[in-house]
Length: 128
Image 1 (cartoon, one colour):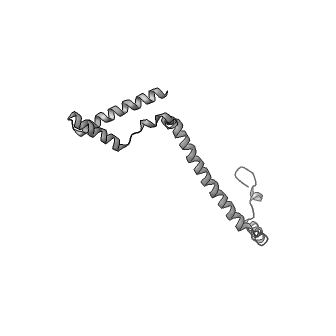
Image 2: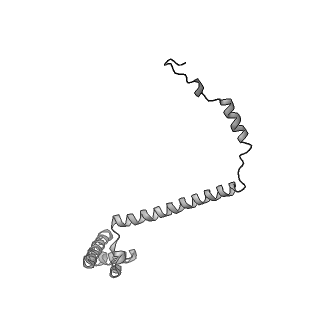
Image 3: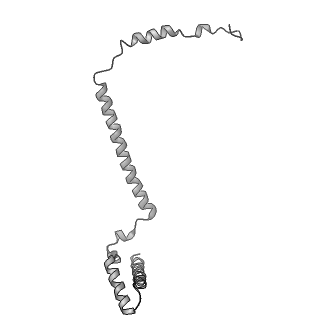
């Protein structure tokens, strides 16, 4: 009897008997022939699904990034192609300004970029 007057001894499991039952059942339980192929196929499917989810997640993140930054409208506007200028063109313009204006190449390049920004701002303003 316990200190509270209840008898719980009959509720204690017989571990030796339980162990013998589990040991005896081990001879009856056998894996099926296709257990390994099924397990491998399930693992391959899980990996394939994980890779698909990662790719889809990356694509979704890219779409959200474009949506959050406001997809650049100049990529969608065909008439804004003139807003892009090659580096060699910018340096050619700077060299012309430096020779004609008698200024240094750094200042001439600053002037070229200032002019380019004004042109691009005008193109974007007219695009709206």
